[in-house]
Length: 322
Ligand code: ADE
Image (tube, rainbow, N blue to C red):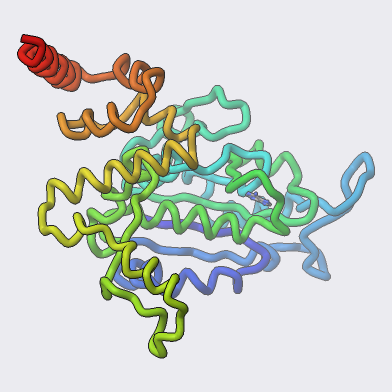
């Protein structure tokens, strides 16, 4: 699978040769084809931008170097993305979809387009090389609209703020997508294990030593020392994997509820299959309103589990009444 990156600052992509992504490329899992768009400029000064028609501030990326660079990478048969603050905001769902696309599956495209309507299949209008993605990094005030339209580009933003160019945004997108490709992280499960993937934020993690004495010189005050000593929960050292999983689940639920009510709301409506103990944790952690929302979106199996829990509690209550 291949990612073409079109930029006037190819040096900014040097970090792709490092770390996990560098290793993935060395291992032939993924190829990063970094293309200097300026080299395609037919202008004698190699310029790539010009003043906007209609006036206004800033400069606009010109069609000629962009079209020629896009043609050079065969962008007529790749999925094309333009990094832009006015695009669809990158999230885990889009990262997963792009990772799947790169692996040759679910070759849908157009889902991130501004129009929001088109959901074309690559093979509908043209054959799509479903292993290649082309990312165009803009600069200046934007790029000539004809580049976006003629090359059927999806606009993708990494957040509601403006960067000086699309390069850092492209790096973020590439990192988020590539790590979901099997083999890139080494341990295939580690990306899928993450709680954000399962719809919740990650629980707190701890490592050695259990008692941390504020650095090698033990120079912290006693209040800090006590705090550090007490922060590793016993359950994580219990060796009881079921209890540890439940503790982590509870922490994830608490954190998500508190910090990201938007994600939490989605989780209540759509989540992986939950077991009895997890449903019990949710009942303890959620208010009545949230638990009602959750109860309305259960799978058949989960509904049966909840019914059993309630039945058992009813019986128990009846016994204690007698
Ligand atoms: N280019 C400039 N700002 C951007 C953003 N927030 N996301 C994607 N590309 C951009």
